[in-house]
Image (cartoon, rainbow, N blue to C red; front, top):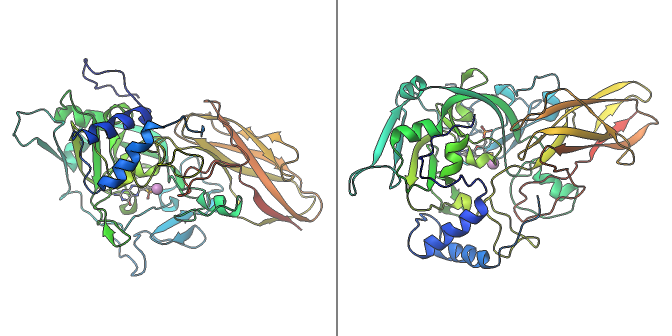
Length: 429
Ligand SMILES: Nc1nc2c(c(=O)[nH]1)N[C@H]1C(S)=C(S)[C@@H](COP(=O)(O)O)O[C@H]1N2
Ligand SMILES: [Mo]
């Protein structure tokens, strides 16, 4: 795209949330921001951190009774992890650039709600919409209203901020909290929908609007015995106007139930939590907003970070994966072609280097896609396995922003944004 519906008087878009977050916290202290469901103490600690903030390291179906997910989860495609399902990388072998809907990972805080498009409404409301003071500022759109608006299609990954978290433990010996994903909490789809900018423009944003907060229609999320309310997370208005979609199609089909039917938010290149599924309302606010999903969760905590945590996570990091099962076996002396994919939230992946000898020697992989931002680049490399035994395959991506995967990821307590080269164990027989 990018879509531009920015009122003429608006300052340049701010896509990096760090500086804005600091301002948002100060506004909260001055009584100018709302933070429903976030404790005063939590915000005060975040605020304290901004004083010393430093530059961060670069960094209809019937549902089976036992699953909060509607679609079938055959064990050869998925690893079930609590309320979630992780795609097996070996199942992606032979699929095209886009992850088939049936194979796409599912991350649910609670359970997939089975909604109908006819009853669905999207309500935009809040102090950031134009209207006389005291007037109820709200605008509603039905499913058909959205479908009648100019549509756009874009290819983008959705990737959980915790994708690869398990390797903080298995490769680096760190203790981290959260779902122990390997690398299968990512998928790429062709999303079709309406630019959020278009819907906001029709709703009439006030020039003082700063935050846009979509909220899901799934059940309230309970953590540690306390309800945090429904999944919601503010986006700075500049990002909301830039490249965000209200998506109703995934790979040419209506969104599957598990992926947000009838409509989800799609925020290209950002951590998955920004792409709110089953969106029911969007608060447009003239005051900065906080939710548990941009305070307690989705910031980096740990010894490498400011004592009270980083700015809210935005862009995904850089990763590579082989389309292979962990521990796959190969015949010695037999020619092979290894396949994989690499992606980054900071730009296109334009170079991938592969080692088939545990990291001693490296060769550039052949790329199978024209490198593009917001999606992965598929690649392959020939390999003739030598003597029987176990070894590791490694792949290291470099993106057009100049990021390269490190050998070791800087740890954080919640295990977000793993970016190190993964050591993929294989056996030669
Ligand atoms: N309403 C709602 N939206 C949500 C979530 C959720 O639980 N509820 N999970 C988020 C997280 S953490 C991720 S990683 C992505 C996962 O999208 P997917 O299930 O379509 O793969 O959805 C995001 N949007
Ligand atoms: Mo996520």
